[in-house]
Image 1 (cartoon, rainbow, N blue to C red):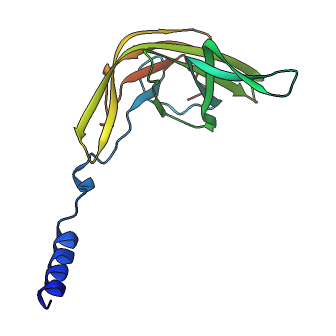
Image 2: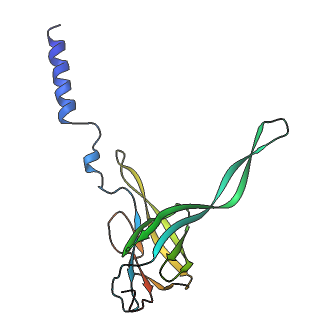
Length: 188
């Protein structure tokens, strides 16, 4: 009986010094973001004077509920619905953005511009096709999703062009895209 408290004490010390979960070995950033740098037509970084809101969009099947005449709910799946979420809201003076990708194979970002001094409002859309790469380090850390960009298209209202500087998106912070804007001398 005297050995039982000693054994419990030893087990407690082992648990303190050797935790079962090794989260400290997990990568510090478990999310993958695409990094966009804003540059002028000469490739120089600049801070936008416009207010920019960025909305992420993807297509997914969603379940909606119809109310029947008797008051009960009936689920119905709406195929390929457009799902939108505001990712950045009314950002001013930005020179770069970090944006998440969809778990689907296609991600769309809508840039909404507002300029009070020039009374300008408009939008640009960036469509990105990508290959999803599940990444699993160990059981304690869980899984992450990495991406490989395969195709990019964009509208050209305020945005001049877009280049892929690194098509591989993982949890390392590095530039993936350069967004070119035609900047007037008064915008710099």
